[in-house]
Length: 379
Image (tube, rainbow, N blue to C red):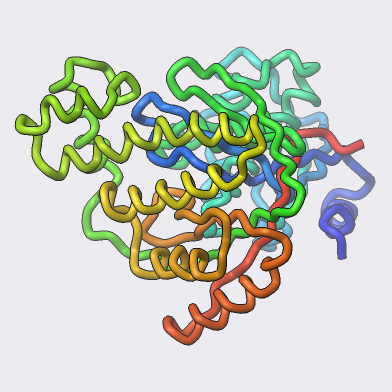
């Protein structure tokens, strides 16, 4: 059954009648990893995997939700004290509260939602959920008077204040601003952005999910962030965005070898994002792919956020002739993103599935993704 039909059936069953459909997308990031908190650039796009909701104002001060995927319901009011106990419902409660805090209007509504964004693959299903409801609340109760940047910030603040995740802005930004056949270069310092056409004839984007998530005994992300901050402080700059390799090499003796490696990756990654954008503009897909492999190498060796399974997926991609491949996301598990020529697409999937399964005892999950629109009303 189609996603929309499944939601409609559940809406009629729970609430009767019909509402309005909204959707928002998961996202990929082609390149630009661990650059957001260093003031650098990221290069995401929305994909054709979505969270979709059917929503109807109910004339009360209560929100009634039903999650098709979880087969669970939640009802809550719109005051701070009304926070629901279910973690999944807190995402939607947070969106309502963050809208109200900004002077927006939210009234009671009934909603049913479901999604086809793969969970645990690093495609930001939570940002898609937040963006879907932020867009809907803006459309239903605020005549779309809240601008798109504020919608993305509403999602980010929901994570910070209601879900305990201190995330950057990229995921929500991509879910809100996504545009079909375009990637978005976002400057994480100024929040300026630019669309780059990304419809490459003869290639597909393929995610290979290792279905692995390594349990970590400490907080490796915070440690890496602290490394970057120490080097920036030694250089007398706010973030590594303003550093180059010459500056880093000049203070090499004054920082630890670990801090040096972390900073070397971040400075190189800033240049790689800009290099990929330039290469796309001139249709140089080989350079795009080469820079993706360089990013994987840096994430694995200098930033040390890879793991054996992800390095193996990257090696198999290289052996198969995949144009570009790298870890996507924070690391230590999750998936690789691969730029695959059409003529080897099927053989690559067969090979990587068979080889990974024979080595690790389980098959990876494969997702072909297409760059699509972000948050929207479905008429």
